[in-house]
Figure 1 (cartoon, rainbow, N blue to C red):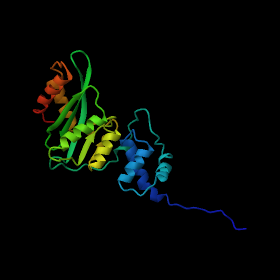
Figure 2 (figure 1 turned 120 degrees about the vertical axis):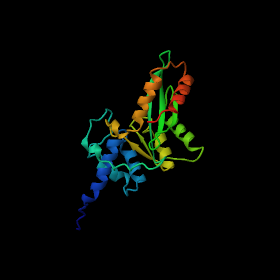
Figure 3 (figure 1 turned 90 degrees about the horizontal axis):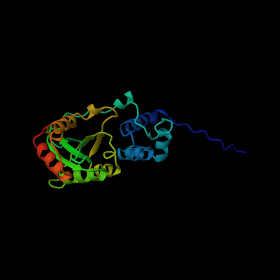
Figure 4 (figure 1 turned 180 degrees about the horizontal axis):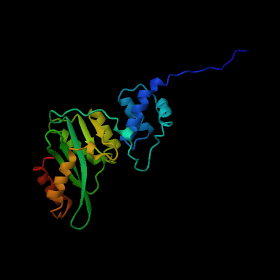
Length: 225
């Protein structure tokens, strides 16, 4: 009787590069689970099916974390960012928060071009989600069809949302997320936020969201990050 025992040999060396990339994605996109990491790998051209992604993902201990992760040296494995030479090469965006005169909380999303340091947009709202960020990105794109090559953000839920991820993928824009606990990864937006707070938010009363929108917009036109 012929034996049905079959031995499979597979080189683990071939998995080293993709294992490293899976860890990099998991460290920088801290809310991504295995399915979204697999989608990201396929977008980047890795020849991997979902079974192989899962086989590598689970033993690495990268299951979706519910708490903020500790800072890891491994998160520093990033490609060096290119030197900026022209506008639309890279933009940064971030939120600042404040209160209306009646104590109601609001947030403002600021978008800055990293080369010119110009504030391209600032939008105030009570609750801004990923869909709102997409609408703001579309409002910047439509007039003259300009798109950035790359957008730098932190790991806020609005920026890692499926809505913004889909928009960026459809328009060929790379989302560059800061490492957890590393605000210096997004250095262009921080000075702008500081100026906006010192020169506007800390010295004005805001009677309504419309009032906050107008005052922040007027001041942002004169601020460079």
